Image (cartoon, rainbow, N blue to C red; front, side):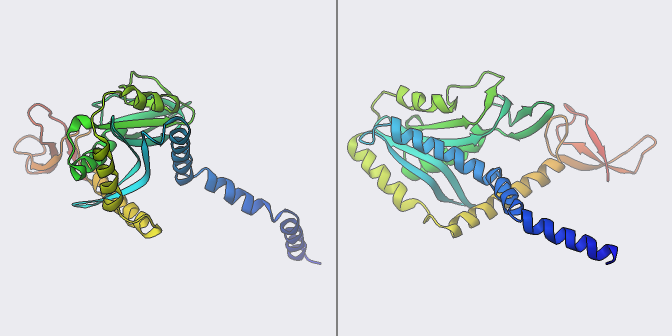
Length: 264
């Protein structure tokens, strides 16, 4: 028996004995995927609302996709009550979280690994405004809430509406002023139910495609933005000096910002 036959036989024996390892690894990878992490985070928020919010006072809507002028926006959770309408964004993250209300980009740090993500308050702003406009409500009757689930720790001061899982119910219950009548609540619930896109795989796929397009467009804009101040860069031509006549990228914030980038 040649070496090739021996190797093939050993390989076949290993596969026969440990075939279950491959589907197990695939299952573990799936459970750790961003999709499943998001689903688990939303499940936790749903369960908290189910057990700790009185259903006679609070009505929960899950995974609401609303049409917008340029596509759609998806809201993780909407809670409607006489005390206002709560638009909830869920973030399932771990590690240290650094960010501020006005910062466009927040930071996640896990040991020596650092990654950036969009300010979730800014993310939730469009969703909140889309819903508020559709319902015809005043700004003070709609509350944006960002809930962090998972093993994360805020390392900078956060506003009251950015909370851990345990603080999300407390935030909602802290709004005690009656702002809406019972008939208003019924009307709002009916508008949400009739105005949302039909929950389906197709709706989800279309929304994901729309978000991917927005992200790619944002990436193109970021690639041509000033690394110092974030303003767009514009193509300019040097008028003097050793590079006279050559083109370069100059910050549109000039003369306040004098950052330049050479053409690729």
